[in-house]
Length: 319
Image 1: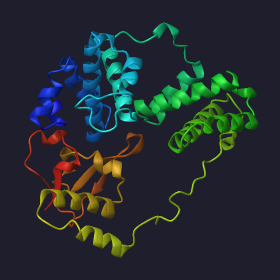
Image 2: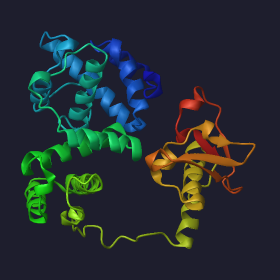
Image 3: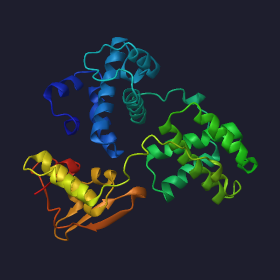
Image 4: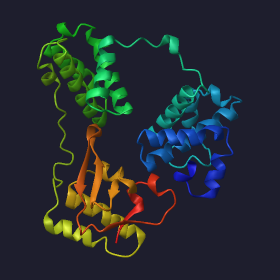
């Protein structure tokens, strides 16, 4: 499974020579099932191998991974294969995901499971609703549930007593210590939770309007869309017989002709192309699957590669 993300034999040898070698293929498969892109998965797999080597230097086994010790190590890391930032989001989060994977397969014991407070029943119901009715991914459900549990811890477990002033005050206090990306995600998750509570009659309707929008104008001067001439120039820039040019042309044509989102294109597989019917199967948000016509000017065909049905749209090119 590692060959899906790494082609260099030297790097594969490094990954499979470390203490985490029995578990990396399974971790790679888990990342693919959870929908992580190739670039992100590569970073997380590197982080998994990195944490294994750090634990071995401390005479600890993989089953005793200490994330706090790993974060401490990253502050002064001089490991030769720790390319890029020593202490960044991907390295730390990748190590957390790897430990969670080891917990799921029974290699590691859950960390401080006895000290973890039980989730409020309303949060449990919210998670089930997100999964059943909104088709949210596991990562999204965890994020939304975390923010839901946080507001209940701050304002109390009886949403019927919450007021717009309480909610706005909670949000402003949290936002004062967070970055822009975190604030935007918190805005979405809190509004979704408050709408859920209102539908279930656990709080008054309209409380979601008390969550303010995050105003930022950093990219205010950027165009909202490309003109027809600009789109034509972008397509023309992908002309050529090289594999990268043909791939880029296929992606741009899908975006321009069918109006697909970047995530829709990235998730396409060769098996999603219905050659005889001249259509594409596209799975969008909330796991809704639709069939779209395959325009003739897209003229897509697959490259002769191994394991093609598992490769993303990078393996698709325009003739």
